[in-house]
Image 1: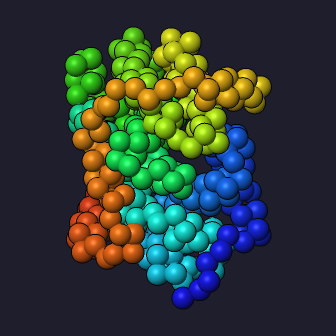
Image 2: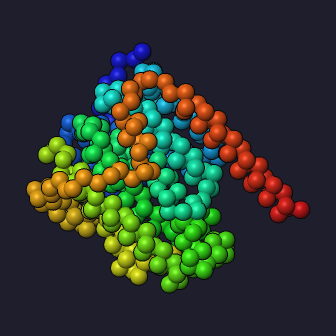
Image 3: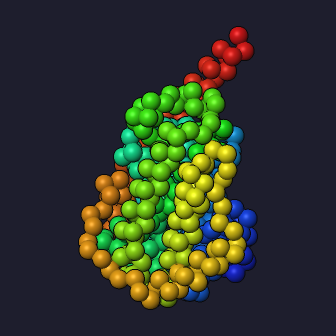
Length: 343
């Protein structure tokens, strides 16, 4: 087993990755205290690389296999010899982050590669819990938060951010053949999702769906406030800044009449700075609110956070086999479609 420490050179590689591909996180991370910032950077860099490997790679099944092997190696204390994995392995051991959490993230990213669609809003939350709620819980653990109530609020914040991202990227995703808005919402609006994917144009019906998604995100941003209030004092400004910056993306979408087809919402550097300054004020007045039940989609994350991070979980092997089976079916379907097109 290697001696796992956060090496300065490895951390520099993590920062370089995030500076180029995760600007909102990078901006908010600058407000985290040094004792947290390095660990958060290493953690998020691994999450970012996992996303890129599955999303941008040629073979999603192979990417899942590779990521699973890298995750196993990191938790065994023998990470792959690259700066991202070495830094990640040091953090998960030092902060006692259960393996079930990054494994949930990888599962959600694999759902992306399958082109999975979501019939209901609840099933969309299942996806958001994996790709973002899990990251929220891991970040809270890095900060030393381990009680169930505040981990639930961290998961709320992660899911809220993901819903904002989905609302912002409706047009971009549709042009790439991806659809995340619940199919039930299309049915209620009298829209055919397949027709929309073939010709993604803005409409009042689509605006109503984007608004509904952002309204749900706002509820979760509000729920997250009590969790931020219970963070260590020196961590509150950074997380409050992340909350404000991501919420501002949704506000920009709303300001354009919820049109995320013809324009991609952005928060410029000056606005991010302004929001970060406001977040410093937030840290002073935020108070813990009434206890709220955890989202059902996030419950398995909270259970995972209570597990021994190094304990093997036989359920993970079964889930991985099921995942590979779904990926194979998706690939066979793609090949069949290509054959029909060429015939």
